[in-house]
Image (cartoon, rainbow, N blue to C red):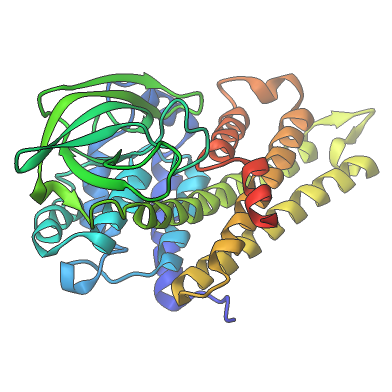
Length: 374
């Protein structure tokens, strides 16, 4: 397996890194996070102009034809800057679903709008009782004439308030725990019967709880076959986990590098902290955890690109390792910075909080360890 980046991927990495370094100082990020939208719409339009929003979509659909490896390169750099724009929700999750399962009309309507920056969207899949089980769905879609009526509530919908379209997982048959009977619908976020409650998350991003009351959708709004939506949901989750893992790798890189730089400057007993042997060992372990996570992230992404039979098991291993490594690197970064490691002015705490949220998204370490063993 060749894990070396191509020339185009290196150019992409350099381009994103240049943007992040120039635009995402922690003080500026804090201001964006506290704004009404929680991110910059101007930056979003820049992403469109730079081609980043078109990166994973096929050339036939007007995209660049990138692979999951290209997305990994971009998301790792986004992780270095703690980028706030809804790339994961709109491009990786919603966009991937339309690209994979959408019919010709759906792709023609939605993908160009994503790529030119005019459409932001979200994937509404999680419910209060579902925990980490993607198949645990109680939101119903009952047949009504030539369409359906959706009733239920989705929670922690990433960037749900800013979304123009929602991809909603519903149950059209079976019980709440069944893998069959799940159907996906593309819903206009401004449709009658939708109530969105927006709130900031602990990592500085935004999410929403969304209640559906007799929301009417037509047969043309259905994504994929009736009752066979679980395979699509799982595919979206896999793409999201790979993207989140890459983001975590970028965040961990900043944390261990910042910690090394700080311990070289901070003096104790007339010596820099970096000269103390026990701290050298600790920072070496931080580097090793990051390196292991990055290597497995690259392997899992390559397997996904190749369509390997080992992909699903490797993704479970990756999500477990990302959670474990993130906690170790984050906790030690905060501890070695001392009390200032938890201040809002220093970026260490912000990276640590983002890593802890990533661990909880699409299943935490315990969940994926159980799935890996099974």
